Image (tube, rainbow, N blue to C red; front, top):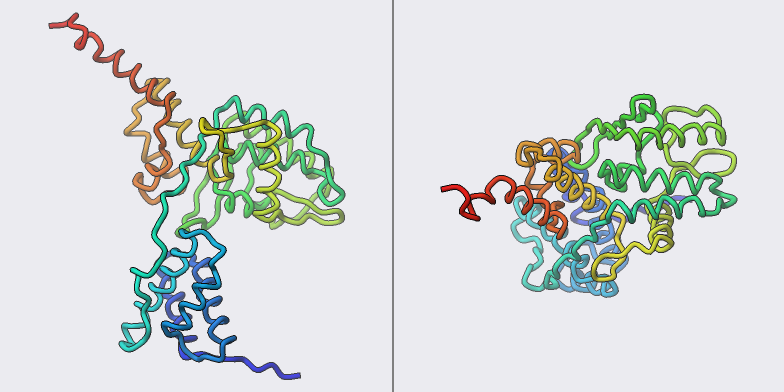
Length: 325
């Protein structure tokens, strides 16, 4: 049976656009999915090119999504259209004034160490499943690594055995955001957690290839966790440990990364370290191209304000109180 491949007037343009963006160091996986979704939608309506009417019907098919998500998808299409317009001046380009208005991003919930301790305790009560005998161990290690090393969820899921130096407590994060790779040394406690997990993993599946995922589930063979599967388990721990922000909200998985950055800053203030000179080190550790990206994660919390105030008072309090003339 032969399969008919439907082509559009912009297939080559999408391929060229993705190739160009990736040559600049961008992964563009989500963007590729969005553009291919648009292409499939156009083909399903017996069109061969995108115009205002077909674009608005495609946008209407996303009505159940949030305004920010819909705006981002439409922005991706517009950026591609602007690229296409360079060689095809008459092609359709969406009007950004018709996009949904941006909504403020939800502020992260900064997780305190005591809350993480409750999550680790709750992990001991997690029941293994027929498909995941090491589920309690996986969720415990995931909590430790996310909170103490600031890994992105995708970076954690992509870790393979060959990326792990359990003896020295070092992780290799390969070609993450902007194709940046980095080494992530772990704390003494996190390294011990990692070694204990590796032992249990070997007892469950024996010696496996270096390309096998670090976090595993499965019965006969090791299979990697999906983002949804890991997030679901972590949310169960968050619920069991009753972790909430000051406004009663539950933290999201990405809030572990925010919490890591804030806790680093808080620790530096309390230890009397030079915060400004340490920020580039934090940016490198978190895989950022500059401290401007890291600043997004540095939220001002009451404990941080108090620590900064205490340092200022220790250095200059005498001037404000009039003790020194």
